[in-house]
Image 1 (cartoon, rainbow over the protein chains, first blue to last red):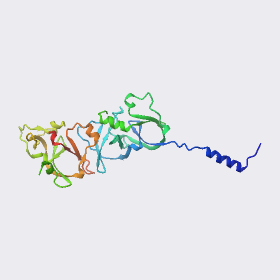
Image 2: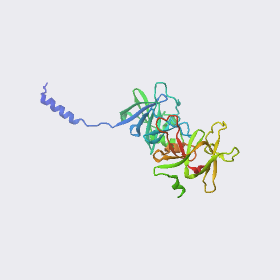
Image 3: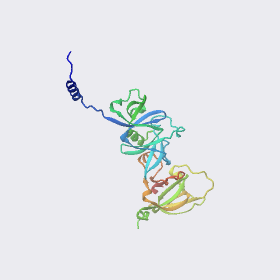
Image 4: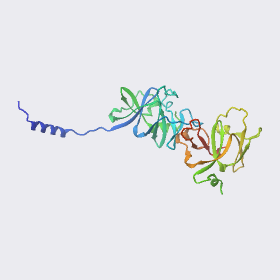
Amino acid sequence: MSENTLDQVLTLRREANQDIVNVDEPLVKLVVFELSGERFAFHGERIREILAHTEVFFVPGCPASLEGVINVRGDIESVIRPHEMLQLPDHAAPEPGRASSILLGQGGGIRSGIRVDRVIDVMDVLHSDIQPPPASLPEHMRSLVLGVLRVGGQAVALLDLDRMFADYARGLG
Amino acid sequence: MSDEQACTTRPAALAVVLFSAGGWRIGIEACRVRGSAPAPQASGARAVETLLGIAPLPDDGHARQSLRLKREDGDQEIQVDGPVELVELPVAAIQPVPPLVVSRSRLPGLRALVLPPPGEAAASPILLLDAGVF
């Protein structure tokens, strides 16, 4: 049995290191939130701000899914409730002890607030963690879901904000 | 001075006639309004709530106002709730209607919004309408 010298060991290690190719996988920033007990996410680049305790003013003539308008440092933005689009029960009042939030999103040339029950996390995930939407996805979700992933053991549906705003403007939800 | 010019009284303000309808505060450009007066009981003027499709306040016998609007084909009168005020709204306070509200609101002629100052939680926004809708 030949004995390795330290020089040989270090040489081997250097060569081994040279074989390592940097394959850093791209990370995707997500804003994960809860809506009627289900978990969803938007791409972080689509969410400009997360607003809490913002006063919403109702505008007459709007559907119940359009909660109203808010003042964001002098600009007026709408606030939609996406429950109906996602066919989720909409309990307008937040659960006791839980303050709901408004995600200020931008997609498809439209900016609007989106009411969510609570923000779970703003996180980076590996692109490969996001799987294509399963075939079992309900019909009404198919056009809105870009992919699915698991966060903390729970399924999260990654939503297409551009599509959501475009569909809402067309009268869906 | 043209009607359009008359709407802007100061460089940074818009003259607006405010009135109420169904509990909402509504404004139209002052240059589109000829005048207002207490509405006679048997007025044939149409109620603004009917024209806008919003629910009127319960009829408790409160006095209504008649608003006379300038129209190319002859002035038109509408019945509104008071108080009727002529105010100058700072241009900076007048905001365009957000696109999703434009898409989904059934309120005819909604052109702009003025939100109450922060802290006035009980206040409601001023709805600025196109007078041509009446």
